[in-house]
Image (cartoon, rainbow, N blue to C red; front, side, top):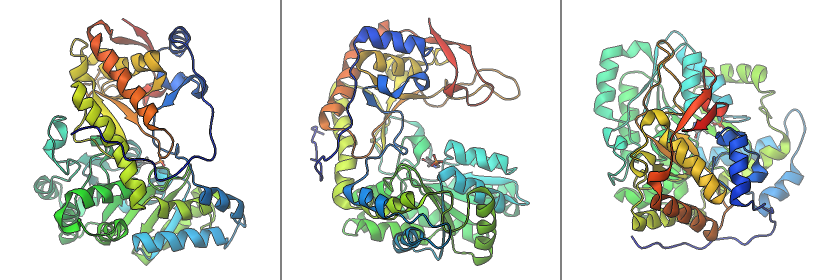
Length: 458
Ligand SMILES: *Cc1c(COP(=O)(O)O)cnc(C)c1O
């Protein structure tokens, strides 16, 4: 595909200046950060692609909403606005705001896994996996095998492997499974979408076996846009109708609003079960705060009520996904491998293919992230063997299925020129790829080491 950029459906009213360091300065900064991108100060980063979570630029309407935010402890109008917006979009009778996605998981997961052993998902996001484990469950991934081949161009590589799901239910026993989860889009597989057909099938399997079906809904809008583009039945449907159709099949959902709801902080939890909702409210009051604010300030609730609707605007989504598709088309021209077709929120560069001389235990994706920072002040991160902790029993290094350098694109933040700088930097690095050296860990924590580990260049 020829690179085509879909122009911004907005103009810029407020700007945030960026510092531009020299290459020598960046080399010193990353060395001082022990070659760990989490150790860099944000003011030393030119283009920050670390995450698309909470890094969104809010609209004038959202900022106006911030001033209108009702900070009352109980019964605030901003709470009512969130419930109105969320009910209209997701069609759930019981909705609870919480301060972010993992808070929803913390409240809900122990309720679903009480007396159960397993939770099955197309693919768990890391905090969702963590909360399943903390609730005493065993999380099991059940994604279609095509997701693991980064060069395959298929429309819905985020789907659940429904045949395997049926087998797993037989193997584990339906009475032992607390929940079946569909993550849309499938973040861990590279932001790959899930089809409505797959949601319907997985939901039917869950319900035939009496197991609750949950949606992990962080990227509900991007997923709906892909459905409109790629699933024949929905080519003329509105984004809102597609979202409603997806959620119709779920018994409950958790959502990080820091992604598609275009806010900097927030989350939601929804259920159709009145008795479960009573328990959710009790746990929410203990962990998050009273039900009408759920760990959020009134101004954040107001921005969320507006952002939920802006997130499903089709002109916005066309531009948003268009940014990723533009970068992907340029990478194709340059012969740089990434998880294809490109997903909704990030480019997952296949570092294994770009740096074949660096073995997995010298962390090629982390090495590429370090070089991107040195080259152009771009901060991406490793989603590979460096991020994967040691085996908890044997303490041996583990090889990841993927070696991705993930470059997230924040919503409404960067221009086409910024995106070109990212692609140009990758093209430059590819030219001298064989000179890039691997890394060695010299200090690490036993869990979630990638946030704080210290490394050395080999
Ligand atoms: C971000 C994310 C979460 C966790 O949400 P936080 O707001 O970061 O706590 C859960 N699931 C998915 C798919 C996510 O992308």
